[in-house]
Amino acid sequence: MSKTEDLPRICVGVDLHKMQFTVHAVHEETGEVVLNGVYRTDKEGYKTFCEKLHILESGQECSIELAVEATGNARYFKNQMESEGFGVVVVNTSKFKVITMSTKKTDSNDAATLAFFLSKEMLPESHLCSQTSEEIRRMLKTRSILVSSTVKIKNQLHGMLLGYGIETKTAQFQSKKKRQELINDLADHNFSQFTASSLEVTLSILDGIYAQVKKIEEQIQEITKDNENVELLMTMPGIGFVGATTIASYIDEMERFHGDFKKFSSYLGIVPKVHKSAEVVHMGHITKRGPQELRTAFVQVAMGIIRQPKNTSEWKLMKDYHTMKITKGSGRAIIALTRKVARIVFAMLNNHEPFHPELMIRSDIA
Image (spheres, rainbow, N blue to C red):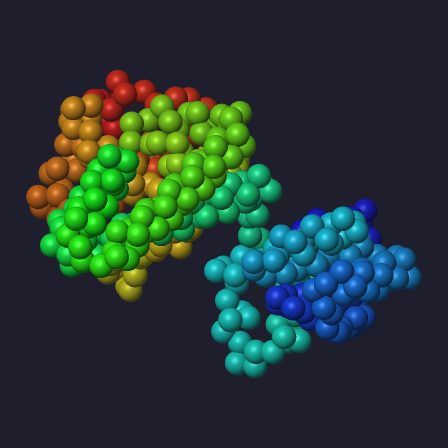
């Protein structure tokens, strides 16, 4: 939120929606309202709005800065405005509750509130990941949807075949030989002339989804082939390619944590809620404030480490996990292990170092 060449600012609050955005602009020094209105989020709407901002910029000899809450199309809005030479602050809504808790919530009031706090430089900024990281996130999300679809289809197949007295295992849908045996079995039982063909169609749908998943994974591999963080993460047991790309894309830039693990763990949402009254301090469940996909990836890494006892049984954090599992239960033990995994990942990425398994048997590993 820096001022340009010490020129006075026109502070513009923007309440952005899918089809339109409402703006409220005030002069930083005088507080005068110099622009308000509603514009469409199409090419013509952006053009009209930017033209008015340029007129203000030249007519009042000022710089233009806009504030917009972090929404699905905030990046596009930011790109459009910055291409015109205007500064944009994307507001972290989880740290700015003034709008959500307002008793008189309208688009114009929300825009005015953003403009006021922008003029006072009191808006918490939200980090926007790089364009590449956002593309990877979208591809990972698409992959996740496809994988979930295969699970649902397989469950449907299990249920259908069980209805015909045929018990199946997931592996039978993977092998071409096993598949054909199932089709032949249905045909031999003469349940219906359509039963076997229905199975064939469903299996072909599975094949189509598998092909798309493979295509997406190949595209992600191409995008991340020179990504140092992905390479570093995959040196750690329990982290596969998908987990590594998920963690790398959601963390994006380590510099924004300034070497502070507390900020890192807070972003992940794996720190406990704290309720303090007088001298009583109560530690609650984890906040879950960070991206769910990232938090899930870290839990999966922890589970992956648990599933490799031959490689990890002597690690101190695994011994701590088994002890805590007995005393506190499996759920808490996994969360505690996830925090330790996060600390290791933080050190690896912050120091640009691969995983060192020999350090895991040290007694001072927290």
